[in-house]
View 1 (tube, rainbow, N blue to C red):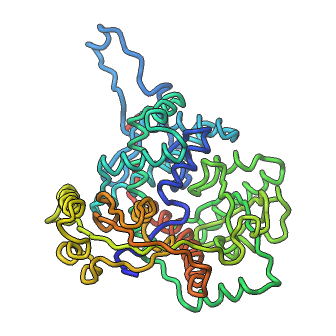
View 2: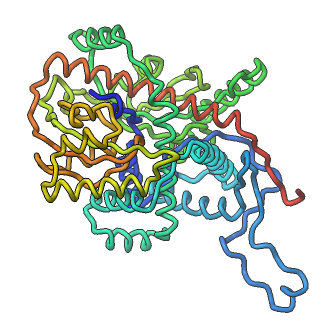
View 3: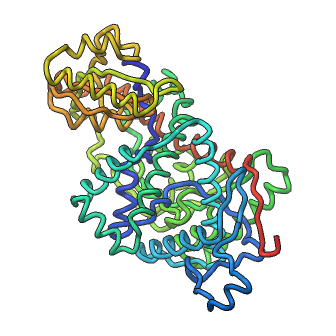
Length: 479
């Protein structure tokens, strides 16, 4: 399999499926920011949010004498800022989503503290993405939103009407999705491509799978994370553990887990009540499995220490893995494909790459040349010498954008130009076949499961480091 399109995805952050789940969790439409990292900080002194996003207009005479500022800086994050109005608008959106999900709202100052830290981490990510030249143009954004509408079984027009009905302006939603795609691409570059899985790890995984004495289950978990900063002093670690113990004490005296998570948790799922959803055992760290092994549904674990901090887990439910259809090695469809890749760089812009591929597609449509001939002449991929041939591809072997476009093609059909983190592609499906679950496939599935678990852990660690290293200055009304 050519390295240029090898899989680099985060298992929980495939941008389309992640956004669809987000939309469905809020009746139909939810906060598009709800998936990403947050770290808690004490409430900002002097923080006063406007009751609405737009202040009431002052009388004309008063305005001429003393103009009132429409907005002001709340936090400086590296070379960017977060304003009070931005926080106010996001707070209103999150409150509406939590209410729709049935999560009891924490005190307003604690909720806005959580949300502000989430926005700080977002800002740090978007700044890094900009520095790395990661952009999402309007064409790609329109395709992503169309996929969201289609997966909700709606036309784009109906989807837009539903957005407005749920109280979210369409332009704001578009920018939310643009930001999510950008952050996902950044994480693919900074985390996914650094995660390696050894052959010995695959061997151990398969040995455990074949051990009939081991009970294979899926677990539905929620968590509260009290984060420990990078290079924390013993005093800081002790203070964070004390905070975790206080949270656990509240839970044991009857506090609602989801509300407590939204109030105290420093994890990316805090504002969703700490919900991790259903996970196969192989997608969870061993320390989590050990912590919940003896729990009954509804029970809460003791404090679990990891490299990121202190966790408290709630076992919502458990079920046999066979109930999900994951037992054994099911038949899997493979696709034989080829592509032409035009990379985007300082010399070739995105617009030029797309234009060039449109010209090549027109030649293919008019049978002026074969796919193999054009790939050998124009493709920037190592597969060019083979006419762009990528061989047989399993689900998950390529990046999400490539796989989605490939899956929509019929044998012999050529795609429109498709953008991925590697550039722009023309894709042609040669043929498809069904694999019956060979030993090779079993090893590939094992490798993917291990990789997904390691990516989950590495992503949380990367976000923690990104936040700890960011320059953050809180402003008060007196600054």
